[in-house]
Length: 304
Image (cartoon, rainbow, N blue to C red; front, side, top):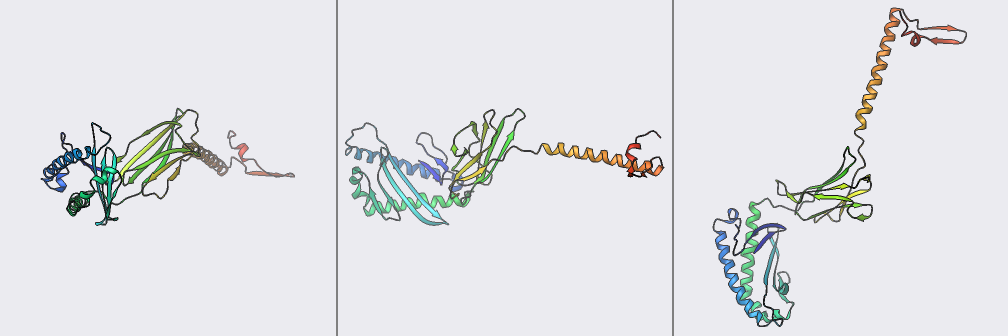
Protein backbone atom coordinates (compact mmCIF):
# COMPACT_ATOMS: atom_id res chain seq x y z
CA UNK A 1 0.00 0.00 0.00
CA UNK A 2 1.18 3.51 -0.87
CA UNK A 3 -0.49 6.57 0.68
CA UNK A 4 -0.49 10.19 -0.52
CA UNK A 5 -2.14 13.46 0.45
CA UNK A 6 -2.33 15.56 -2.71
CA UNK A 7 1.05 14.65 -4.23
CA UNK A 8 2.94 14.38 -0.92
CA UNK A 9 4.11 10.84 -0.27
CA UNK A 10 3.13 10.02 3.32
CA UNK A 11 3.94 6.38 3.88
CA UNK A 12 4.42 2.98 2.29
CA UNK A 13 3.70 -0.55 3.49
CA UNK A 14 5.25 -3.72 2.16
CA UNK A 15 4.74 -7.18 3.62
CA UNK A 16 8.49 -7.88 3.70
CA UNK A 17 9.65 -4.35 4.53
CA UNK A 18 7.19 -2.57 6.80
CA UNK A 19 7.35 1.22 7.12
CA UNK A 20 6.14 3.42 9.95
CA UNK A 21 2.67 4.88 9.34
CA UNK A 22 3.15 8.27 10.99
CA UNK A 23 2.24 6.76 14.36
CA UNK A 24 3.22 9.98 16.16
CA UNK A 25 0.29 11.71 14.46
CA UNK A 26 -2.31 8.97 14.21
CA UNK A 27 -1.64 7.11 17.49
CA UNK A 28 0.87 4.65 18.86
CA UNK A 29 -0.93 1.46 17.78
CA UNK A 30 -2.07 2.68 14.35
CA UNK A 31 0.73 0.80 12.58
CA UNK A 32 -0.37 -2.48 14.15
CA UNK A 33 -4.00 -1.86 13.19
CA UNK A 34 -3.07 -1.09 9.60
CA UNK A 35 -0.89 -4.18 9.40
CA UNK A 36 -3.84 -6.34 10.46
CA UNK A 37 -6.12 -4.63 7.92
CA UNK A 38 -3.62 -5.11 5.10
CA UNK A 39 -3.02 -8.77 5.92
CA UNK A 40 -6.78 -9.32 5.72
CA UNK A 41 -6.78 -7.51 2.38
CA UNK A 42 -4.03 -9.82 1.18
CA UNK A 43 -6.08 -12.92 1.98
CA UNK A 44 -9.17 -11.46 0.30
CA UNK A 45 -7.15 -10.46 -2.76
CA UNK A 46 -5.76 -13.98 -3.11
CA UNK A 47 -9.27 -15.42 -3.07
CA UNK A 48 -10.47 -12.84 -5.59
CA UNK A 49 -7.48 -13.47 -7.88
CA UNK A 50 -8.18 -17.21 -7.93
CA UNK A 51 -11.84 -16.51 -8.69
CA UNK A 52 -11.06 -14.09 -11.53
CA UNK A 53 -8.46 -16.45 -13.02
CA UNK A 54 -11.28 -18.87 -13.80
CA UNK A 55 -12.89 -16.22 -15.99
CA UNK A 56 -9.69 -14.98 -17.64
CA UNK A 57 -9.41 -16.17 -21.24
CA UNK A 58 -5.75 -15.13 -21.59
CA UNK A 59 -4.48 -17.99 -19.40
CA UNK A 60 -1.59 -15.92 -18.09
CA UNK A 61 0.55 -17.41 -15.31
CA UNK A 62 0.97 -14.13 -13.42
CA UNK A 63 -1.72 -11.59 -12.52
CA UNK A 64 -1.96 -8.29 -10.66
CA UNK A 65 -5.00 -7.07 -8.77
CA UNK A 66 -5.02 -3.40 -7.74
CA UNK A 67 -7.40 -1.44 -5.57
CA UNK A 68 -7.38 2.36 -5.85
CA UNK A 69 -9.36 4.53 -3.44
CA UNK A 70 -9.30 8.27 -2.84
CA UNK A 71 -11.37 10.92 -1.12
CA UNK A 72 -11.58 14.70 -1.31
CA UNK A 73 -11.96 17.22 1.51
CA UNK A 74 -12.63 20.93 1.08
CA UNK A 75 -12.63 23.04 4.26
CA UNK A 76 -13.18 19.80 6.22
CA UNK A 77 -16.29 19.00 4.16
CA UNK A 78 -16.42 15.61 2.40
CA UNK A 79 -16.70 16.42 -1.30
CA UNK A 80 -16.20 13.18 -3.21
CA UNK A 81 -14.62 9.72 -3.17
CA UNK A 82 -13.62 7.16 -5.80
CA UNK A 83 -12.96 3.44 -5.86
CA UNK A 84 -11.36 1.54 -8.76
CA UNK A 85 -10.52 -2.15 -9.13
CA UNK A 86 -7.99 -3.09 -11.82
CA UNK A 87 -6.95 -6.47 -13.23
CA UNK A 88 -3.50 -6.62 -14.87
CA UNK A 89 -3.39 -2.83 -15.10
CA UNK A 90 -6.87 -2.31 -16.63
CA UNK A 91 -9.89 -1.01 -14.71
CA UNK A 92 -12.64 -3.58 -14.28
CA UNK A 93 -15.05 -1.13 -12.65
CA UNK A 94 -15.11 2.13 -10.74
CA UNK A 95 -17.42 4.24 -8.64
CA UNK A 96 -17.65 7.98 -8.03
CA UNK A 97 -19.61 8.94 -4.94
CA UNK A 98 -21.26 11.91 -6.67
CA UNK A 99 -22.56 9.64 -9.46
CA UNK A 100 -23.86 7.14 -6.93
CA UNK A 101 -23.50 4.01 -9.06
CA UNK A 102 -20.86 1.58 -10.33
CA UNK A 103 -19.47 1.79 -13.86
CA UNK A 104 -18.34 -1.56 -15.30
CA UNK A 105 -15.65 -1.27 -17.96
CA UNK A 106 -14.61 -4.86 -18.77
CA UNK A 107 -16.51 -8.11 -19.24
CA UNK A 108 -14.67 -9.55 -16.24
CA UNK A 109 -16.01 -6.68 -14.15
CA UNK A 110 -19.57 -7.86 -14.73
CA UNK A 111 -18.66 -11.16 -13.08
CA UNK A 112 -18.41 -9.26 -9.77
CA UNK A 113 -21.44 -7.02 -10.35
CA UNK A 114 -23.87 -8.92 -8.07
CA UNK A 115 -21.43 -8.82 -5.15
CA UNK A 116 -20.29 -5.22 -5.73
CA UNK A 117 -23.85 -3.87 -5.88
CA UNK A 118 -25.08 -5.83 -2.86
CA UNK A 119 -26.08 -3.86 0.28
CA UNK A 120 -23.39 -5.68 2.27
CA UNK A 121 -20.46 -4.59 0.08
CA UNK A 122 -21.93 -1.12 -0.31
CA UNK A 123 -21.85 -0.80 3.47
CA UNK A 124 -18.28 -2.13 3.58
CA UNK A 125 -17.17 0.36 0.93
CA UNK A 126 -18.68 3.37 2.73
CA UNK A 127 -17.20 2.31 6.06
CA UNK A 128 -13.76 1.71 4.53
CA UNK A 129 -13.63 5.07 2.72
CA UNK A 130 -14.83 6.93 5.81
CA UNK A 131 -12.45 5.25 8.27
CA UNK A 132 -9.30 4.85 6.18
CA UNK A 133 -9.53 7.90 3.93
CA UNK A 134 -11.60 10.80 5.27
CA UNK A 135 -10.88 10.26 8.99
CA UNK A 136 -7.16 9.59 8.53
CA UNK A 137 -6.71 12.60 6.26
CA UNK A 138 -8.42 14.86 8.82
CA UNK A 139 -6.07 13.67 11.57
CA UNK A 140 -2.97 14.16 9.44
CA UNK A 141 -3.99 17.62 8.24
CA UNK A 142 -4.74 18.69 11.80
CA UNK A 143 -1.15 18.13 12.90
CA UNK A 144 0.81 18.68 9.70
CA UNK A 145 2.10 21.70 7.82
CA UNK A 146 0.21 20.79 4.67
CA UNK A 147 -1.87 23.81 3.75
CA UNK A 148 -3.82 25.39 0.93
CA UNK A 149 -2.33 25.59 -2.53
CA UNK A 150 0.11 28.44 -3.07
CA UNK A 151 1.52 29.70 -6.42
CA UNK A 152 5.31 29.91 -6.84
CA UNK A 153 7.35 33.06 -6.37
CA UNK A 154 9.72 33.15 -9.35
CA UNK A 155 12.95 35.07 -9.89
CA UNK A 156 15.30 34.93 -12.89
CA UNK A 157 18.88 36.19 -13.12
CA UNK A 158 22.12 35.78 -15.04
CA UNK A 159 25.78 35.61 -14.08
CA UNK A 160 28.55 36.64 -16.48
CA UNK A 161 31.76 34.88 -15.50
CA UNK A 162 35.13 36.61 -16.06
CA UNK A 163 36.02 33.81 -18.47
CA UNK A 164 33.03 34.67 -20.67
CA UNK A 165 30.69 31.92 -19.47
CA UNK A 166 27.06 32.97 -19.01
CA UNK A 167 24.80 31.09 -16.57
CA UNK A 168 21.05 31.70 -16.27
CA UNK A 169 19.12 31.02 -13.06
CA UNK A 170 15.37 30.42 -12.64
CA UNK A 171 14.22 29.98 -9.04
CA UNK A 172 10.70 29.10 -7.84
CA UNK A 173 9.94 28.97 -4.14
CA UNK A 174 7.05 29.00 -1.68
CA UNK A 175 4.75 26.87 -3.88
CA UNK A 176 2.36 24.06 -2.95
CA UNK A 177 1.63 21.38 -4.06
CA UNK A 178 5.06 20.30 -5.20
CA UNK A 179 4.24 19.43 -8.82
CA UNK A 180 5.82 22.11 -11.00
CA UNK A 181 7.52 22.49 -14.38
CA UNK A 182 10.35 24.94 -15.07
CA UNK A 183 11.81 25.16 -18.56
CA UNK A 184 13.95 27.47 -20.64
CA UNK A 185 12.72 29.03 -23.85
CA UNK A 186 14.59 31.06 -26.47
CA UNK A 187 12.36 33.02 -28.78
CA UNK A 188 9.56 30.66 -29.73
CA UNK A 189 11.49 27.45 -29.20
CA UNK A 190 11.52 25.13 -26.18
CA UNK A 191 14.96 23.55 -26.31
CA UNK A 192 18.26 23.26 -24.46
CA UNK A 193 21.10 25.50 -25.69
CA UNK A 194 23.67 24.58 -23.07
CA UNK A 195 24.23 22.59 -19.91
CA UNK A 196 21.08 22.47 -17.77
CA UNK A 197 21.03 21.42 -14.14
CA UNK A 198 18.37 21.30 -11.44
CA UNK A 199 18.36 21.42 -7.65
CA UNK A 200 15.42 19.04 -7.60
CA UNK A 201 12.22 19.90 -5.73
CA UNK A 202 13.22 20.58 -2.12
CA UNK A 203 11.03 21.27 0.94
CA UNK A 204 10.99 24.64 2.69
CA UNK A 205 10.67 24.94 6.46
CA UNK A 206 7.04 26.13 6.15
CA UNK A 207 5.91 23.05 4.22
CA UNK A 208 6.11 24.65 0.78
CA UNK A 209 8.65 23.72 -1.89
CA UNK A 210 11.66 25.13 -3.73
CA UNK A 211 13.19 24.49 -7.16
CA UNK A 212 16.07 26.11 -9.07
CA UNK A 213 17.00 25.31 -12.66
CA UNK A 214 20.22 26.71 -14.16
CA UNK A 215 21.38 26.88 -17.75
CA UNK A 216 25.06 27.31 -18.66
CA UNK A 217 25.09 28.71 -22.19
CA UNK A 218 27.35 27.59 -25.01
CA UNK A 219 30.48 29.67 -25.72
CA UNK A 220 29.68 32.72 -27.83
CA UNK A 221 25.99 32.83 -26.89
CA UNK A 222 25.21 36.39 -25.65
CA UNK A 223 22.28 35.18 -23.58
CA UNK A 224 19.70 37.36 -25.32
CA UNK A 225 16.03 36.38 -25.75
CA UNK A 226 15.85 33.71 -23.01
CA UNK A 227 12.79 33.26 -20.81
CA UNK A 228 11.89 30.86 -18.01
CA UNK A 229 8.48 29.21 -18.43
CA UNK A 230 6.76 28.04 -15.23
CA UNK A 231 3.72 25.75 -15.00
CA UNK A 232 1.91 25.09 -11.72
CA UNK A 233 -1.63 24.14 -10.70
CA UNK A 234 -2.11 27.55 -9.05
CA UNK A 235 -1.19 29.41 -12.24
CA UNK A 236 -4.09 29.79 -14.67
CA UNK A 237 -1.67 29.52 -17.59
CA UNK A 238 2.10 29.04 -18.01
CA UNK A 239 3.93 32.10 -16.69
CA UNK A 240 6.85 33.52 -18.69
CA UNK A 241 9.74 35.33 -16.98
CA UNK A 242 12.32 37.05 -19.27
CA UNK A 243 16.00 37.13 -18.39
CA UNK A 244 17.53 40.59 -18.26
CA UNK A 245 20.48 41.47 -20.50
CA UNK A 246 24.08 41.74 -19.39
CA UNK A 247 24.45 43.67 -16.19
CA UNK A 248 26.18 47.04 -16.39
CA UNK A 249 26.64 47.53 -12.65
CA UNK A 250 30.43 47.10 -12.88
CA UNK A 251 30.75 50.24 -15.04
CA UNK A 252 29.26 52.51 -12.37
CA UNK A 253 32.17 52.34 -9.87
CA UNK A 254 34.68 53.29 -12.60
CA UNK A 255 32.51 56.16 -13.88
CA UNK A 256 32.01 57.41 -10.33
CA UNK A 257 35.76 57.27 -9.63
CA UNK A 258 36.53 59.27 -12.78
CA UNK A 259 33.90 61.87 -11.90
CA UNK A 260 35.26 62.28 -8.36
CA UNK A 261 38.81 62.62 -9.72
CA UNK A 262 37.76 65.37 -12.12
CA UNK A 263 35.89 67.22 -9.36
CA UNK A 264 38.89 66.91 -7.06
CA UNK A 265 41.34 68.27 -9.67
CA UNK A 266 39.07 71.20 -10.60
CA UNK A 267 38.45 72.04 -6.94
CA UNK A 268 42.18 72.05 -6.17
CA UNK A 269 42.91 74.25 -9.20
CA UNK A 270 40.21 76.77 -8.27
CA UNK A 271 41.42 76.87 -4.67
CA UNK A 272 45.00 77.50 -5.80
CA UNK A 273 43.98 80.27 -8.20
CA UNK A 274 41.86 81.93 -5.51
CA UNK A 275 44.81 81.88 -3.11
CA UNK A 276 47.10 83.47 -5.75
CA UNK A 277 44.57 86.23 -6.36
CA UNK A 278 44.33 87.04 -2.67
CA UNK A 279 48.11 87.31 -2.37
CA UNK A 280 48.22 89.70 -5.34
CA UNK A 281 50.55 87.53 -7.35
CA UNK A 282 48.11 87.10 -10.24
CA UNK A 283 46.32 90.08 -11.82
CA UNK A 284 42.81 88.93 -12.60
CA UNK A 285 42.55 90.53 -16.05
CA UNK A 286 43.57 93.47 -18.27
CA UNK A 287 41.81 95.38 -21.00
CA UNK A 288 42.85 96.67 -24.37
CA UNK A 289 41.15 97.68 -27.55
CA UNK A 290 40.16 94.09 -28.27
CA UNK A 291 38.35 93.47 -24.98
CA UNK A 292 39.00 92.00 -21.56
CA UNK A 293 41.28 88.98 -21.12
CA UNK A 294 41.52 86.76 -18.05
CA UNK A 295 45.20 85.78 -17.63
CA UNK A 296 44.88 84.07 -14.27
CA UNK A 297 45.07 80.51 -15.64
CA UNK A 298 48.14 81.39 -17.65
CA UNK A 299 49.98 82.84 -14.66
CA UNK A 300 48.70 80.47 -12.03
CA UNK A 301 51.63 78.10 -12.45
CA UNK A 302 54.25 80.84 -13.12
CA UNK A 303 57.13 81.14 -10.60
CA UNK A 304 56.51 83.82 -7.95
